[in-house]
Amino acid sequence: MSVLIVIPARYASSRYPGKPLAMLRGATGEAVSLIERSWRAARAVEGADRAVVATDDDRIRDAAEAFGAEVVMTSPDCRNGTERCAEAVKNLGATPEIVVNLQGDAPLTPAWFIEDLVRGLRADAEAELATPVLRCTGQMRADLIAERMAGRVGGTTAVFGAEMQGLYFSKEVIPFAARDFAPDEPTPVYHHVGVYAYRPNALADYPTWPEGKLERLEGLEQLRFLENGRRVLCVEVEARGRQFWELNNPEDIPRIEAMLAEMGQA
Image (cartoon, rainbow, N blue to C red):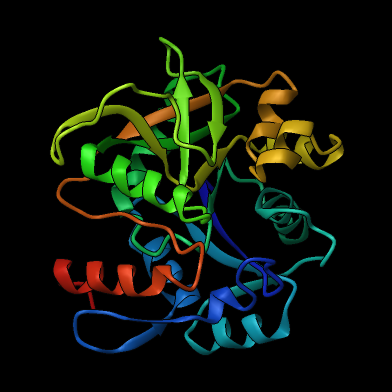
């Protein structure tokens, strides 16, 4: 097997319990669950050999199997999606070249984000984890700042070095800029897209490391790789006119539904 996509999904989210089963209406008015939209996104990726939903909850398992997804059950003790992916791969007995973690809260993730991510990891022999970043326009940056000022987490931002090695990820809007930007103007802020591609050995190592201090503070699982000195590759992706937003809070549903309608996605 070359590429395995794992969609980790848990019911007991502190910010949004039952989020994978939240219903989102697309351009046709049809209501489709978040987990099914994530499954559809995974199935659209060219070069992926297999896609599975990894969960610890019978309600999510039943919903996923009802629309035809392959499901692997994992422990409720998994602390985040990366640990759940690692356990899923172990339980499957799979030996893929690359494991992709397509987190179930980003139903607008285009297939080419993942395809570019896999190509990026294959091209960088030293990277053990790759993750996509999307350059923010002035409007996207303003939206992220507005979410934080309202006390909500509206997304994660990333900063990286000259060779695209990840330096830090934060739920704050970084880096700081002392001026405003026009709505369509490119900014120095990069939105971190919640998708990861791992080399299997690095993924297997991850659960053996203690939870990092920065990981705990930010609530960002990828920081555990940085805190253990592992190279994280940031792969810049292009929106190609597509809008992107993650479902972090119930208030995000109308925004995502409006984007689905505007883009004509069912």
